[in-house]
Image 1 (cartoon, rainbow, N blue to C red):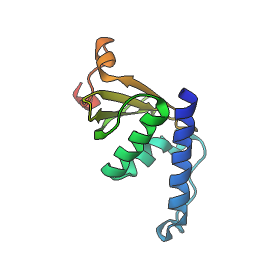
Image 2: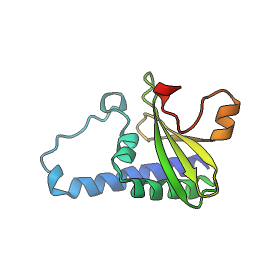
Image 3: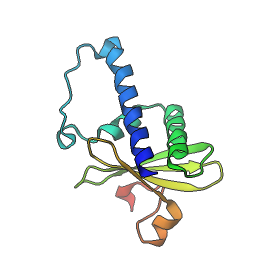
Length: 135
């Protein structure tokens, strides 16, 4: 299941890269470094650059690929970044009122981990929909 999620994100990144590469405004852009530590979290940057509607649709597809249930994403929230690893954390609220935290790893694949926000709270990992600086 995790492999499907990773492959899904790779596909999104590649598709986004192909679309961005073909646009006129990117013709003069310099190539990005291959090392994620030098380039920053590329998968997160791609997600962050999306409109809120596109981001919601992308996360809906993410949930289908992950096998978790979230038929309609009603809200997305960028919670913050782990300053050491560069991993980004996104929160997603679904139409069924479930809330999730999605860790977007700062690696070449844009690997992800997903956790129900109730579980996050129970294990002392903080609260969803609260920016890291505020916790």
